[in-house]
Length: 313
Image (cartoon, rainbow, N blue to C red; front, side):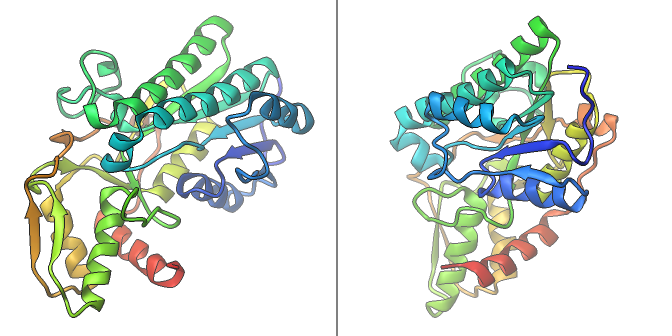
């Protein structure tokens, strides 16, 4: 464990084609890291333990950033509880245990703010983990991620290894998922408003009441937090990563409608669930160490919409 990390260290980014993994890849490349490894899910099935071990034995990375996960919005989580639980457990267990057994110098585990209880006090602090019940619609994914956090904490506690967990708030940005059946709220709204604009500014129907509050972090800001965690030995095992302010879903809808240029009506479908009433994160622990987000929501949504216009299928 005496090996020191530098710009030539070998870094494996699991999930490097996804929104988070690709942002981490861009950030590390921009910082001058030269030896990055990525494998597509076809090249390496992270659910397969023997394949993961074979890959780690061959490549021997110094660092693993685990940005690989089966993810989705309320509908996808609610309708597919078993794969959201089991596949996420398989992916992270194979990577965490494989890294531990091969003395990987640093492991950065990425999770989600949904690990915290549904009605936890706001803003969410790291110590609120496991103090109450979870949001029922995405508890399966949350339980998998909590298991990953605790596995990294256990390795850190028992073996003194530099395994750290970063829990971002709601993320958005380039390479997001814009599929209306499985996407999160912000990219789904961008696509809905865009398609409605192209369809003679037809009305847009959105789930719930619009009153829940959500915090949104541009994925490039999370990537900078990963670089920060890579380049510093952080004193604790778990850190929230957020921007520190939130908006109502209704405010978000109006902002996106304005950015897209949709002139039609917004209809709120109150028969659909709202999810957690509020999820603002307290990111003061990481902020006090020196990381800082740089992209505000309006600028970030504009950038994301421009990306969507250039890259949508």
